[in-house]
Length: 296
Image 1 (tube, rainbow, N blue to C red):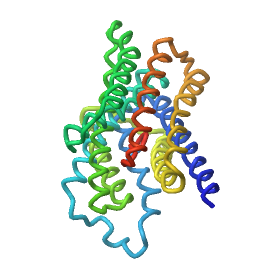
Image 2: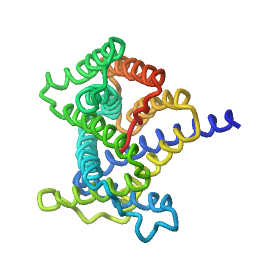
Image 3: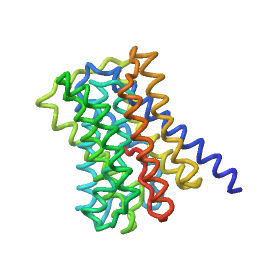
């Protein structure tokens, strides 16, 4: 039974990674639409799968919570992170953005020290250092060429770390997954609407509307599959599968956008993967909550 659950959990993780990768591709394809408009679509249409998680007996008052402040901070930080990675995807190669996004656990370690008072030993500090070197290797050529778009996936990783901390706190006080996801989607939709006076929102064609809907559905389904993966299988078996996203990024980038990863991207990604793997193994040994690879 456990073996079958592990297999099913692994399949859920692979599908989650694939759906996130497909969403990233669609974000690049719909580049003529303002980031705020795409963000609004991601949030609005992403609500559809979430409603299927709400228990029928709670449909009338599922939105009630005693932790409005925590939901606001988690949702606001998450919305900023989403905006940042969408901008990064529009202006950088898929493999570059995906590689830098892997450094999220590094910031979770640092934020855990600052906000949760956790004590970090030498092994995880080594992992943090390796991760930072990896990020610098990937982004340095960009800064040399005055391509400051590399800062956006870094902003995403900072937001990722903040979101992870707030989700831990919300989980500890008993907030259900669907409620956390619901408030995040609502806040992200509002965030997107606020860009309307400043951005160039366009009336989408029927075809493009379909793509915008798919962005929302793919992102939400990917998150749900991610959560289901951790519920079904041992974390030590499913988490390493998240690195398939780099494989998908390289394949999609090459065939759809003529992107060829540089030696900087490959070597930097290698260091970041090693770094996050060390952090994951250490947290698994300490039986701490494992940071989800991506929540957006």
